[in-house]
Image (tube, rainbow, N blue to C red; front, side):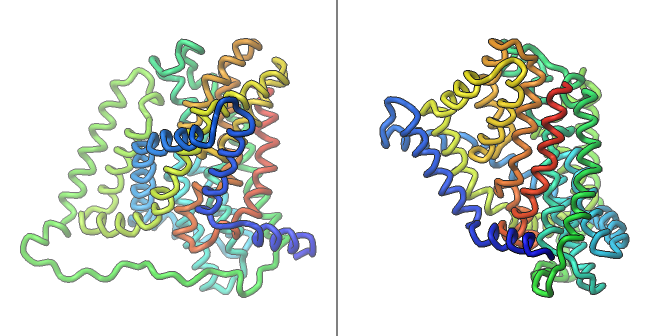
Length: 443
């Protein structure tokens, strides 16, 4: 490892606190900014705004927790295990390990962010265990970061909340922008090229970083417990818990209902939202596990990784409340509008969305709060609404590499800390950021 690389990693790891501490610090910073840059707001007013927003994302928090639990449960099933084992068997070197984890994490993230996050985390964990068994020295921090890359690509993928929201008739901002079909956003050729670009560039970057790093013995896999205990022999009615009939039947019924509803929807992509995705994940998890006992055991293991979201999401909802009710978000938007032209506005929308995402790490929530302000500015400047949607989408996903909130499930599964992945994720962010910026001007 070069002296610069070593110094960089040590510096970033030394100055980074825990994710909960980061959330508290960001709360204080947002409160100070509201007091300085908004008028007629006292400390009490800012506090009331924080309290007002504290529980506003409660239903969304539950949706996120369920998605992560079900995605994790699905990843712990036998079919998912077979896929992970197949990928793991191809990891014959440290370079192959980081490339395979990053590649499949990006692919999964483009399909669905929740599945991508959990699949990438478990894959990083399994590949780390494989490397230890095979005496392959690999930076576990880099490997964990590769498993987190789904959050760098998700909003431009099939589960991108803002593009899917505005593609549906009757959405909350239809009066401002009309209905924008996914053919102008997610399925537009520039975004397809961006997806292909990151699919190639991110694994290649992982390979280069792996060549620059020579991990020490201490940079390996932490010892974690986690395998469920062997079940006792079922007796009497307990046999129903262990039969595959109930789980498979319920899973098939749920998937059948989802497929039927999807066929009856005019826009198949418009069918997908957080509730429908969770319903489908539930069905697949039951189907793949078969027995209700196996499903329950996997779900119990998966729930452990949601603690951070349960505790921290209200804090970020409070930050959103400060920005929304104190007028701080409007101050940000007006500033970027004043310094923008029709040509430069997509860049400033992208930049402002990146900043706001650090304070409000929620793509759907961020669109609801920031979207109307950006759309009003775009209307004044004559900018196509599809550019606004994708600028927010790219900016939102970009700074997930600096904001460790969504990394909490991965940290729980891998046993890593935020300071172990953020030095690498910042480098991936710089590369992907340049690709997204170029694409914005091609839309």
